[in-house]
Length: 174
Image (cartoon, rainbow, N blue to C red; front, side):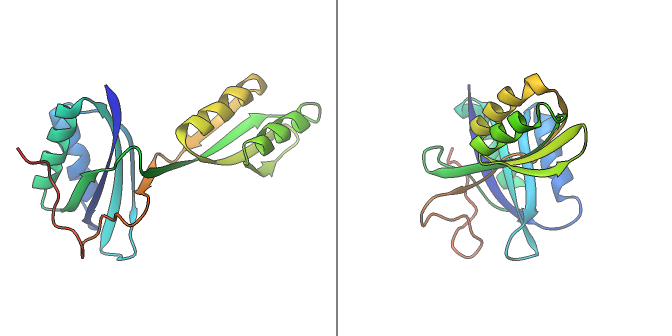
């Protein structure tokens, strides 16, 4: 089983997210990550959905998404030519003794310290999942007090685009 990243353009209106997530739950598909945000056209949102499964699961997901009236276009992103990022906020227990070590670790991962208190430090990190997991691994000994992750966002590299004006509804052929 491998992780697939599916990108979908959907109508930006009430109930769309509920219909998409309901489709997954009714079919017994687990969503690893789901992010949604407006595109350059405020009437359209882009969903980035990470799911784990075999090719048959992926095919079903794309077919079922393609049947929803709110879905304009959908396809799997090529894992070898897409840019994947996530944002993570992590609050660490850090007093004046261990604060320099925590700040040094954050710097190594090109993260930013965004808040400091007498007993905590909050770090913002952006990157691929492996980078964020690596940062967490090094920060855990200091005490992770809170953690928030945005979920995956992804776009394909180069000229390939998922766009209303250039693409028809994409589904896998049966």
